Length: 215
Image (cartoon, rainbow, N blue to C red; front, side):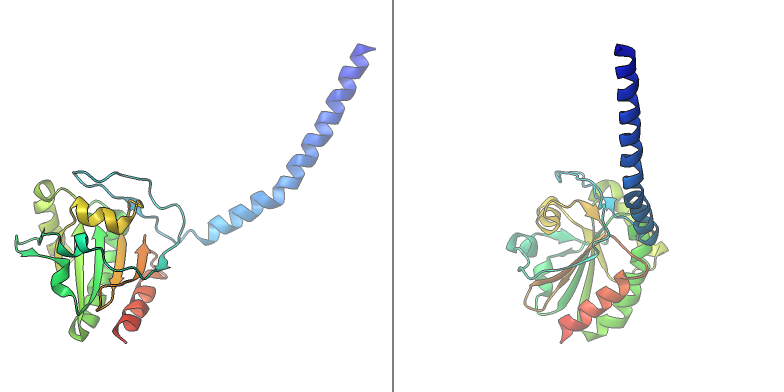
């Protein structure tokens, strides 16, 4: 008698298992379809700074452009920076102009894909009053030669420097993935933030954001 009961239980469990698996198939195929169609997005890399930025995970979703409007934090605007030639500057020096601040690193694959597009945009918009500034999240001492070689290899003609923690942390707001780009208005408001790089979308969206900022 007990053997028959055990056999009956196994039959019921098997039917339920089959029904459960069958019900999940549309979800599985749906996820596969979505994954296929977002495959062109290049995920952001994980930013690292020598001291003392807390490293987080890389971006997991292709949320490229985020509209925003807070002002550039004062500690970011007045922080002393140095460019690749050792010249000092501050982001606040460029208030009154539209700015693009790009956080990147020499080892970052998506950054390497994005920077040629930034060079093109700089050539197009610099004469219209746009200041583009690339800030590496790397250790300025350890990466100095790499950054200078990167500038030559990629023919970067805009200002390149380094982002200390007091600049990178308030901008990233806990999202430690790079590249990240910020479009700053003439009155120092953060109009749009871009995380990661999409060959299909980022350049066009960044260009439109600059056009809007210049109006």
